[in-house]
Amino acid sequence: MTTTLILGGARSGKSALAEKLAQASGREVTVVATAAVGDVEMAARIAHHRARRPAAWRTVEEPLALAEVIRREATPGRLVLVDCLTVWIANLLFSDGCEHPDTGVIALPQRLGRERDALLAALAEVAGDVVLVANEVGLGIVPLGAINRLFVDEAGRLNQAVAAVCDNAVFVAAGLPLVLKGALPAGA
Image 1 (tube, helix red, strand yellow):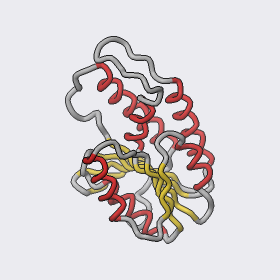
Image 2 (cartoon, helix red, strand yellow; image 1 turned 45 degrees about the vertical axis):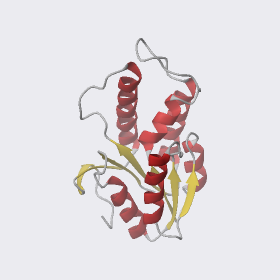
Image 3 (tube, helix red, strand yellow; image 1 turned 90 degrees about the vertical axis):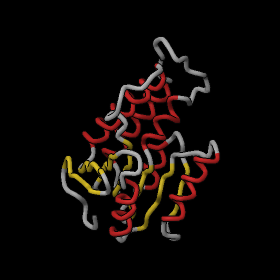
Image 4 (spheres, one colour; image 1 turned 90 degrees about the horizontal axis):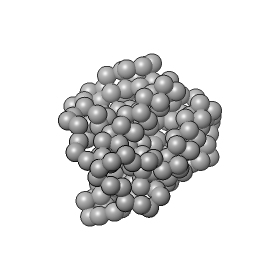
């Protein structure tokens, strides 16, 4: 069992690298898609990702209960590709259905902490290979608005925690992988 985190900016090539690793593994692949169609632009992004994947790959759409799906799907002989953790953390930030103010201190939804802890525990116990894709959103300017800053902070904390439990961590820029931890899995 090997766990790999692939980080990068928007359109850096991180999903393409994850898909290449999944294809090269020779295993059955389950893609766990965390995005939900919220508007026309997101629908186009989702369609683009679907079109790139081999038809034999199974897709499970799960915006919130990621650990549960990983525990179920990450079995010997199978590779689970999660795309992406950043969308997942955004889903959890708004999972309680309330509007977050643009100023002041914002309390994290309780579900976010529970799901994050469950994900970290699942990654430490999986029986199959898991490749996780996440955006590195903390390299730019500090965003305006309390909820935007909270999102960047929580995404960064999640990336650190996932990288700590994963065997490998890879940063992708301009389509080029840079190994941060472990090794680049075969097929990259």
